[in-house]
Each structure stands twice: as C-alpha cells, then as structure tokens.
Length: 320
Ligand code: ADP
Ligand code: F6P
Image (tube, rainbow, N blue to C red):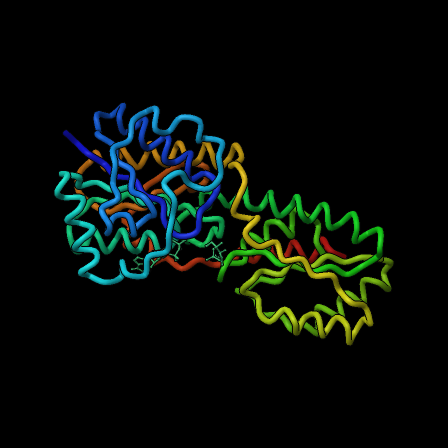
C-alpha cells in the first residue's frame, strides 16, 4: 500500500492544521496510508511517527498552531541524523513525505531526497512570505491581518494623542509583512530589510509631514530593518517628539487561519498528494497568479526573493 508521512517544521503558521487535515483526508481518498510526525524533523529522528485517520484531523481546520507540533532541529543538517530519519520512514515502508514549513524546512526535505531518495513535497508554511518561487506562503495573509488589527488599534490612540508611533513586525530577513500591512494600514513609512534607508531621512520626513498638517505618524518597522534604537534617537533629535514603540512579537503567528490561507492550504495539500503519486522526486508546491503549481524543489530553493519595489513606492506616494 502507498504511504505518506506529514510533518510541520520551523516557525508555526496559521493554516498548517488546514494542510494536515487536507493531506490526511485527500491522501486516504487517493489510497494512501497516512502518517503524522511529531515536532518536525525532531520526531523523524526520534521515531515519533503514528498513523492518522480521517477522524485524527477533526475540528482543526479553523485552528492556529499545529496539532503535529513543530520544532527547529539543527541536528537535521547532520547526514547521520538524516540517515536515522530515513531509516525510521523506511522501516514502515514510507517513501513519501510532505514537509510544511519555510525555507530551512524545505531545504531539509531536499537533503532527505538527495541523500536517501525519500520523495518530498514541500508546502510553503510560514508567515514570512520569504520564498521566492511562490506568490504567497500559507499563513502570511492571516498574519498580515493580525498586524492590521493591531495597527488599527494603535491608530486610534495615536491620532487621539497626536503621536509618532513605531510598530515592529516579524518577517526575519523579508519585509513583506511590513510592506503589505503598512500599505493596507495607511502607514506613513515602511522600513524593510531589503531597502536601506537613512533613519535621519525618516525623522525629517516626519517633521515635514507635521508642516503639511499631519498630527500623527505611524512607522512600520520590519524586525530585520536595522537598529530600532537608532530610529528612535533620530526621531527624538530631529522632531523633538518621543515615539511610542509596539513590538507585536509572536502574536503574529497565532490565531485561526483566514479563508485565503485555508483554501490555499487545501489546494496545495491536494496538489502535494497528486504530485507524489506521479513518480519519484522532490517538489515545491506554490501559487502563481492564483494557480497552484509544482516545481523542482532544488530549483525553487535556488530562487532569490526580491522585495516588490512597486508596492514600496506606493507606500511612499500615498503617505503625502
Ligand atoms: P523555516 O522552515 O520556518 O524557515 P527554519 O529556517 O528555522 O524555519 O528551519 C526549520 C528547520 O529546518 C531548522 O531547525 C533547520 O535546522 C532545519 N533544516 C534542516 N535541514 C536544513 C538545511 N539543509 N538548511 C537549513 N535548515 C535546515
Ligand atoms: O519564521 C517565522 C518567524 O516568526 C520569523 O518571522 C521570526 O524572525 C522568527 O520566526 C521567530 O522565531 P522564534 O519563534 O524562534 O522566536
């Protein structure tokens, strides 16, 4: 009988559970025995693998986090550890694996295929939207909406007190959360890791905007965009105002997935089972122009993510 295992790895993202549900149920529909792996690659190494049934994934489509739990597993970069993981799959005759995670997680899957011939389908599950091969990752849209919720709340008090406000968001080296939330939230400035900006210029711009009648300013600061204390210092020096600083932190990773992420999770998981059924290989599953597609995993991971400079320009133009 055909068998497939499913794991979630790296930072959790809203929609991971929706992926697990769809992969298990569609896998069974396509004649597979389906298995879950606890705590990502850690569970693969420690042999924490168990069979899953349609009822194992009841009542999870709407939940954040991941019922399989997740982990960062640096040991997986070690060939001997991967050999152990492959052995744990092989002794159950499992030669297909669905990996749901970000860049590091998909790289781990590629290594497993290259070294031990385990077929891998990688689903982009991360709030960061930092994978170049796909328009969107699962969890990004929900996370941006969580940030927007926070920006709306901050805006109320910011406007009432006529303040300058800095809101720090996640994204590691990718500015997409900041960019999309900043544009959708009508923020004055978006600072992203990919575009270096002189913080004095930002402070000058806050000062200029006051002359144009703006009483409050909101700056979205991506966590990888530099030293936040330097920005605060520049704003104090140039405007004489002390900005409020709100770091949203892990709240951005939680919460139930929205419609977009749930539907994408279902479509990508179904595609993953279909591509694994087509033969041997390692594939990345993504979405381009609203269509779900697969491509060679190595090729997908060799692509370099670039910031959308048009969107960035728009945030500047619309903040006059
Ligand atoms: P994400 O998958 O969300 O990007 P990480 O970058 O933290 O999160 O990666 C998740 C896990 O994948 C990490 O524990 C990392 O050690 C593991 N991993 C396994 N193999 C590799 C690899 N070849 N390169 C990078 N990370 C890997
Ligand atoms: O990759 C998801 C992410 O939330 C990043 O945006 C962030 O930099 C990182 O994970 C935080 O990781 P941790 O949960 O280990 O603090």
